[in-house]
Image (spheres, helix red, strand yellow):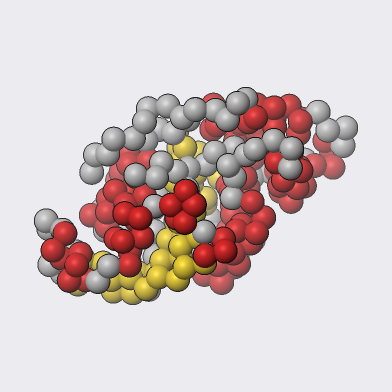
Length: 239
């Protein structure tokens, strides 16, 4: 499925590069090396004075708890940014006995920053970063057989692509009843009405909107205070 994603992503007034300088200038780098939580703490500390668009510890804990509960073998994130979510959730997946975490990021500069921070956190071999459009990367993952189904997918990228990427995963057969869980960030602020409308709609409403293919039935659980939407696939009905 094609989508009008941007080909580049604007940096946040150089804050992301300054973050890298801040972390690598720490005098206790040896203590930080291989410690995901210390890297996360430094990112949170930096974000107190410079604006970053990372998920943060409060919302992050909700997702980390979900990972501990579901114990996925693989997890996908759409929108890696500077690597905060990949470090937090990748570590959680590894602790839960998982095999791989996939971070899909459009901006090569963000991906480079993520790679350095993941290396510092000791997660570079566990987290695989795919640079490019999310729809293209999803197609590659599915075609390669590396990720035949979505177990948990964290969605925090180009807002118009939330819905189109979900529909693509459905068409690829990656959304599986009683297996697939989606966690979408920033659905209340800045907001994403089309995505919420789609995942909260009934099967009949989806049938009218869909041209062909299987129709997914979902249970959704909103977390207003954290602006997360947790969506679980509970069934598939053929059109």
